[in-house]
View 1 (tube, helix red, strand yellow):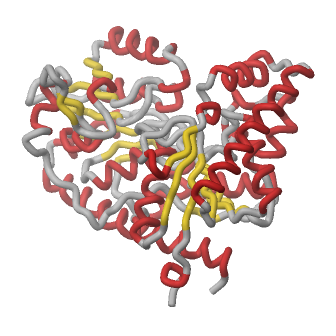
View 2 (cartoon, rainbow, N blue to C red):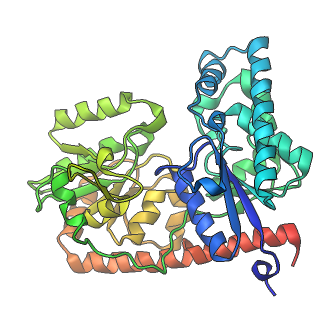
View 3 (cartoon, helix red, strand yellow):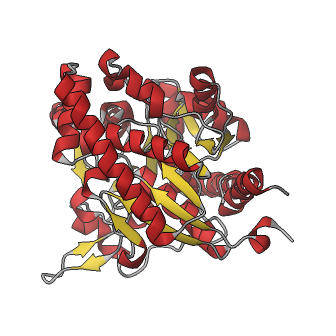
Length: 424
């Protein structure tokens, strides 16, 4: 009898939010898919939720956009000033949040807590401290799923917050199993904390084949302001500087196509609009058609009262002729996994995680080292004009994705984590 049959476990998922299309929410849902398919119960606590109310515990101050949390962040990481009053307030909010965690546990009586990034990136200091103290007080079996760490972001380097970062981002305790999404992060985690780690990259359910463009999705190009015969070069990322959007714009400019357009699916998110304005000015300067289509993209398809459609990321991928992924840095790369799942050709910068964890698996891509060359552009043009080459590329990548980045792989990894808690 395996662990799934022996233990019908329940899992309490905790984060700042479980809503929308951010990477943490998307990956958390995939874990939930696998766990519920094995008969496990799940419940959620966060400051923003689009989950079923019956299995959710809503705590507004757990959100990183709560006004008091934002002010704490500003004081610690922008002004870099810490007063006795600020320290006291952090402790007061921590105690309130810890009480909420206890209430969440009492309400749903879960067996294992799964913390999604709230013990890694310090966007809510009191929440991280509350989670760490809850674990220390209860010895709650905890899987800490880390997507990005504070030491990977310069904006979180602050001597006035150093004690908080050491205490909770992440904490070190025998009840915690640490999961990272790439090997570089795992090695850094071990160096900073001495903790062991398990590697679970971003995944998709490759056993469910993607469909083609259907009747609903056929209006996607027109609704996004494109001609039906345009060359749709998709960058399925937020507009932030580490995404390298200038390189995508340069590629669109250099491609030999009269109607090539760069389409970006997300806006800036929580990092401000300064870079978005820089990109708008840049594409105007070099003469590239840019569409930022975030208002057309949602978690689910819908049609409003005026007949306007909201599409999903799947519609964007299925309508794309080429996906470009010129990121300078990524924690793993949801867009890469999604591109190979939706069987689209990809042009990708060889960012460090790609070199360390993805490239050795043999994926068929056109890659470059930081900048485009004439040779790279010519190879891309040749590929676009060769449907047989594209067909071979996407089939190879899909099968490798099924092997290395699938729900089946995730199930095996989760089973091992449970065996670590409960024994063989």
